[in-house]
View 1: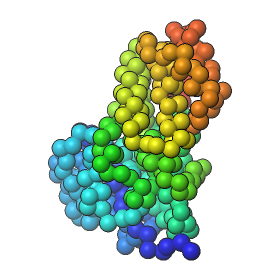
View 2: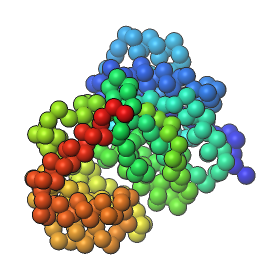
View 3: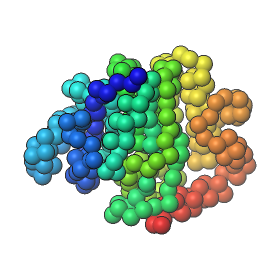
Length: 304
């Protein structure tokens, strides 16, 4: 029988950006779940009169941090968190009102559940719904809830990017239960300052994609020393090869023949048919494919 004494710690992280922080905090406060069953922790690298006063007024733990990495800020929050379940919220995202109640009920149903990933609604900078979507089970920190015991602090703090993937792989390697839920419980904001950028022109799209993919590739390589199971390492090696192949489209020259073989024979979280199309494009239609990807991104970021 599942435990009924689960308690949630909501961890909100912000670095330099303060425009949407109050919206994020308010969405965590205005939950259908009783505040007796969860706490809210903000970790940010700046002081702000309005945000700090609001946090104090609403019993929100407010940490000033000079740590530049997301993993470092999360570890600071975990260091003081009381919850055995962690829910993450990026500073520009928001929770649906029923998010935490839904999460707590799910974890109360099963002691073996260690990872819950909910779907999201993409919104623009002014909150209008967008057509953007991503159904990968390791995408978007604000969609992830995890048992605290799953995160290995020492190794966790060594990875600088792709923390959502890192957390997913921790859960995968644990051997416990993971649930990928289709219910939309998070608002995921797409702006020119978010992980998923809104682009003004083709050149900025190419430059951002190239730089971003290189950072992601290095983070995946960092993770290789953390995991040991055949399945988890297979997923990670697949991500490394696919990232190298995607880099080819944007001017990178890191993909080799082995990467194309890895794409076919290792576990994937993406659509295999989509990956094969990208692989073919990276070999024969780079310029055309970059243009098509740009158009696809623009279409996803159009208001519904």
